[in-house]
Image (tube, rainbow, N blue to C red; front, side, top):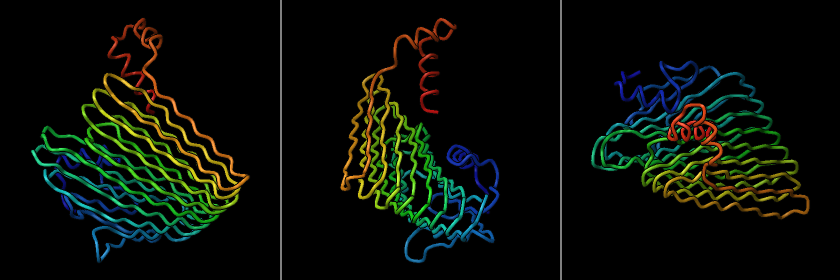
Length: 308
């Protein structure tokens, strides 16, 4: 594995909680190059030949293993598009940790666009964690545009944790999912924007099989002059259950647009949406301030608890 500098190591810690070389399978990418890769007996990582990216093959009934595929960028002006495909075998139960960190100290925009496709086998279960982080003192933007496609076979389970808390100037996250009978999808998005940042999250989940279900929940905070849009649509094409929820805190001059959508194409599709946007309650601030916190410290405590 290529030696990483201190900035690259810090980015890896932020997006993938990595302090050292991870156990299990991994593919680490830095400034558009693979700097480390390892397969295991049950998880094979193969670089694509026609485009930038990798194929990850997880054998059926693989249990208690993980895959780390983080990306870090420290070169100003760099732009890349990467395609990663995951093939999860029947009955497998694994954790996949992705994420991208950009440190831009220059004047040009840096951008990472990643397309991830998940083909989840019958009765397989995966937990997917994707964290985005930006830093650097330059005027160039830190731009991240992840696209995620999920295809779930019968009885499969996908849990997705999507996190963006700091430093990303512009992002458009697009997620689509198609579920067969008995499949379940759970999404937990946590997002904070500040300054003049912009964040667009779009979800389209198609419940195609009987007994399939989806629970898509976003919690977000918009500060300063930032803008957020949460657009989530659940399509019920069979006897299924679907729920989407947006719960947001607005501060300063922030703007938030929530667009929950439901489409029922079956008499037995049970679909629910919820959306709530508001400022921090004054009584919450007062209660914490009586304990000795300043108003700013009280706000931070409330926000941290909200985004957990």
